[in-house]
Image 1 (cartoon, rainbow over the protein chains, first blue to last red):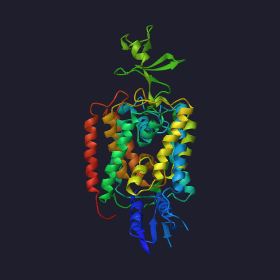
Image 2 (image 1 turned 30 degrees about the horizontal axis):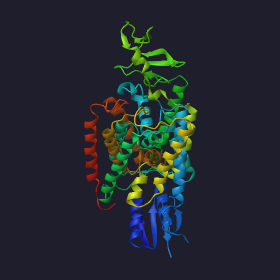
Image 3 (image 1 turned 90 degrees about the vertical axis):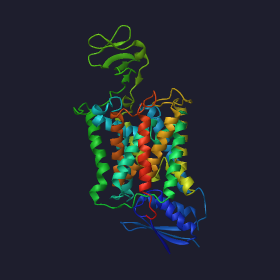
Image 4 (image 1 turned 45 degrees about the horizontal axis):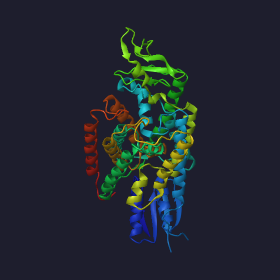
Length: 69
Length: 419
């Protein structure tokens, strides 16, 4: 599983880095985000790209898991 | 199993959020706010700065604690707390962000409006805003070039809890001062534009209140009075403003305002909607070009449509390039000023509205950008660099040049390959 760490990054870096992973052909990935904005934007991007997305809030960060079959 | 789609549910949520914010902003104008200024983050922060330092910075015409800003901060904070998104964070080049906020405000006050108001002016039929909108596009494009080169200001980190509460705390302090002023207990040092005041174009201007549509009470010069012929004369009898000048006097923007509670409640609603939707006034164009995402673009389209419809319904729509409220028609000046402002916003990672919202979610870096905007507003008026309805100030072009050079320096300095 590919891991993308966008914690602490301003817009639009979380989207850019997640999209880069998608463009590389990743079918399952874990994105670590620490702001509501980054979480929302990344989840929307992955959902619209056809991934099944789950978000786990650990308190310190959001662990966004996305898989596509 | 999801399907690939270009327009997902978040795009419609953002479109709806934009519609709502645009509609409320247009409605606020009918409630007393300045024309096409139902909501303007730059103008409102500037007015707030004017309340505290307006006596020093010549901001007599634009000094008022805009309750919309207080409402937006508290509304966004509340929404973030409820949704467990309030997280104290920061440490990503805070001083650079202060400077970027400062420069954003500089560009906005030369254009006469922030990136939010540029769209709202368009929604009121003000075609001179088109030059500003083109500037936004240019600034975004410049920002995209820099982002593609790897620009970033470094990662923020989780901070100690109190540091996340600075902007909400400021909102509470502002609310206290706003209430004091509303109940006639404004502190001595503060400046507040008299509600409904008009100013002539003279230097220095004569300021007066109207009653039943005719000049009634002279506020400035002190001891001045209305003469029989309609002119305003000073205590010693010399004419300060001719009758023609008095007839052509315009309302001072700071004196045009909706009732405090109306502004505050509207701000609260806008703050909640903006926090939940992540509405951004520059991100739409950016994401569409950079990552082929159109969600945020739906937001600004909604904003313009919402404002246009409500302005038409309320009879406030005025299509044209000239005679627009709180606007000048300097095409090149508007274009360059907004290019500078939008470029600064790109380097910050979001428009001034977003900075206020993120500051309200505990982001100390965004709060630094807001602080930079407040300082920039005071500086622009103190240095007589801000534009007026007549056009650009004489030193506006050199100021834009200096700001552009600083932005390019920051862009080059912040270009790094890895985050």
